Amino acid sequence: MGGSSSRTLQMEGVAIEIAEQGGGPPLLLLHGGHPSVRIGANDTIVELLSGDARVIAPTHPGFAAPAPAHLTTVDDLAYLYLDLMDALDLRACTVVGLSVGG
Figure 1 (cartoon, rainbow, N blue to C red):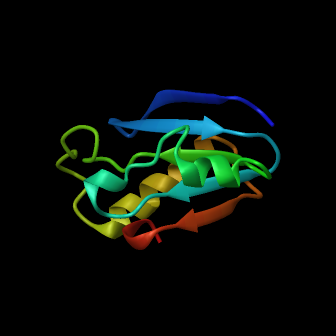
Figure 2 (tube, rainbow, N blue to C red):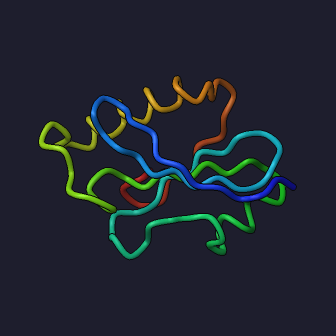
């Protein structure tokens, strides 16, 4: 199993915090809508999933810092994550979405 790390990527002028943990095939984990459910490395769900996958868990824009003015809809968020998947070369990736992340 790989270790855990966190980093911030700039996507379209938006800073996205990303926690990663584990090894194996990539799994993009999108958290729910309440700010208290931000997912980071060492969270129980990340630890459980990282036994079989490389878990990539971004924090939705607006949860760690103010939301950018141009991100106003769930569609905007979905397109941002499609761009993130391209930037991270996540071509064959499982996506798990919780609540608004789904």
